[in-house]
Image (cartoon, rainbow, N blue to C red):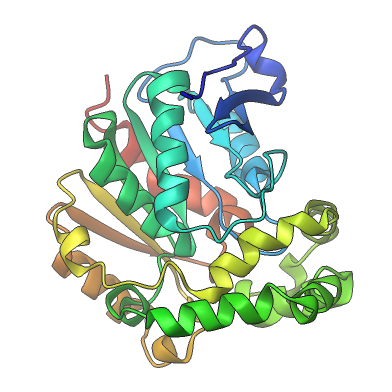
Length: 310
């Protein structure tokens, strides 16, 4: 059965949740329109990170500030399957699954070219989306992309399956109950995501706690932790013809041991050496730049986004 688009775009400025059907799953998204003015330029398609409690809500601060700074692009902000208000089937999700979801979203809901803005280790989803629907993507912005070692070394399939089976068990369920506590989320965010502990605020923690309330949200997180996204993307990155801007935090770090010794400058150098039309910039912050360093992040990408846009 072919999935069908079910959209409601009558009141974009209120940013209500809207829904479409993909492979018989109900998928959520919202559209942000500039306040009191007509949209201009190429729309943005935001790809949120995967993690405990994460969903399209990750981008709310960015969307608000984008409007406040006078930017006029429409913003499409979808929930990936397994996250937010989208259905949460018990699946081992791969980047290809999410890319197919976004491809369908582009074809049936957006129906025009976009600029993809992707956070962190969801870069493989953006890469797969470019390969599937290059004609609907004009540019890419990579926010805090993973270390080069993570993006160019394939994780053995046996290790991925072993990790998934370990997590997809009573042990994993117990771990997730602990991982969604405010104490754990604060500790993890401070240790791994933010440059400043003060930036790990109540808004961030409340959003994660609410996003992880449904235990079925663990399946997407466990798929990510199992490393199904860990492949060698060297040739795929080298084949991206679209102009691409990589934005790195001054104190960017890696959760994986493979990337511990790589400096932000070295990471940028690797990406720019591989991307045919790559640009790079560093700003204050660590690994969640659209949230921690929202104003600087927008200043860093706005010119790139609006260059030569119709």
